[in-house]
Image 1 (cartoon, helix red, strand yellow):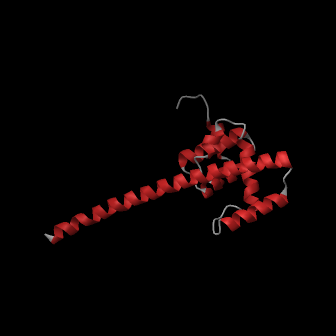
Image 2 (spheres, one colour):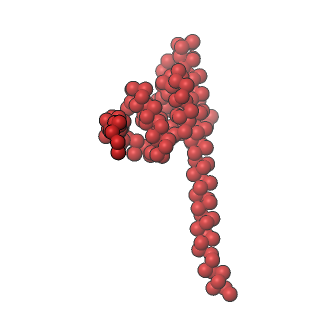
Length: 161
């Protein structure tokens, strides 16, 4: 009788492990989405302060230090990253269809796309593909370096398959 119980245990364990992995994946997606939304809001606030009050490097540097003091051990609040948040917000603020896309991919992928792509069609393409295909940082860099956007555009034609 004990052997029968042991035989059913490995599939049971696999099922539980799979559920845990799926839940962890969903939690990471939620955290990533919330992080991008937070960085959007910080970028917006900094952008407005720079415009309205002519904030510069020293104020953003102070903001960075204060945030790091308030939230020790939490990464992401360096002065350079705060400037990236501002750039991120300003790059997408006037494009209605892009902000929902940027929220669907990670912060690192968003930064790579902004740094390496200047054309809005390329940006939208890489945002969509990263979301659809789940490209990692390395995958995305590889696709951009190998001109995936241009190659896909060249491959499109109206010939029958």
